[in-house]
Length: 420
Image (cartoon, rainbow, N blue to C red; front, side):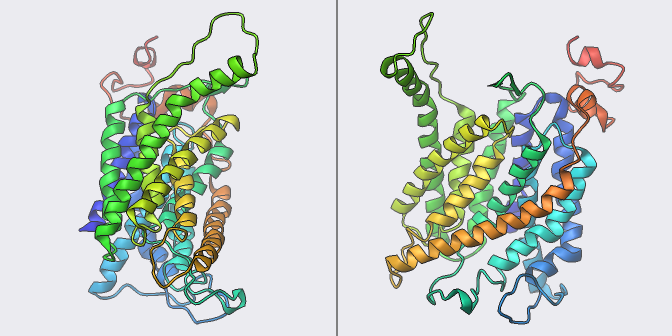
């Protein structure tokens, strides 16, 4: 049942991404999200589950399963389905990040490779019997230290987030997003769709925690507190930042100005949505071993991390239409690194907590690097042609359009569709 709820997160991703892009690209978003499920199911059944949970001959370094595991028996079926929905979640994170500019076939190839090989390898390292869960003796760690990732903060969200970052860098920004060294906001076409998608994702995050069956009451409590603290923190930061910038420039540094300038302060709904999701992502790694006070602190850090990452993306002119990078990459990394610092295990001491943090950092870097390497070859040459994709959107690849203003012959009615 919890796996079905996690699978329902695909609807949340689809609605969130559809509301965050322009109307002419909605059908393309919906197709990609559904293909993440249907193609991913076949690929994960064919090879992904074997890479993730195949039997391993114990050695000094176990990086991938050496023997194929055949799905046979009721328990294996349930285990397969539960892990497949996590793999599909990691794969679909990239969909919104490269929205409105990725070639359809390139994205399809990425989905096959990511679900069938890249994400299962990261899962094998941290969740099955790989070298992160069972550190080699050469590392000389204390017995109580291993890679901790309870509900996919690193193996699902950070892994998908690094793929989103690489994809955005290689795809480049959308036309008109950054020009003359300035950023220009390209608004999505439907805030209600974004809101509905966010609520579905929140329910899916709770299902991610409930499905593991280990201290779930504490887990869902921490997930709720961490997400709430992150959303409130980041929304306040975005509201206060223009005022602080104004005071710094014109009151402290005394920069001359030709006219009276007032800071533009506003409460951002989209920031609240994304920052709340980032806080929940940060909780996934250690929500079962944190006290609510620690969850609140991690949520605050995740809110700051989201704001800083969003600002860095703008400085580097990296275009992420739905905020996949600050939500999943930043939130996942913060959660994996901070979970050992606030763990409530009585038998562990602060030294082990810090050592665990160091090893979690190693595991997070390795898990995300494998996604980086695998993703570069798939979509680095798969960008839409500028003169077609930006203007035609869905009309370029599909015979149907999502709204009634797009008629049965989209190319013939191009001017009417776009108000020309």
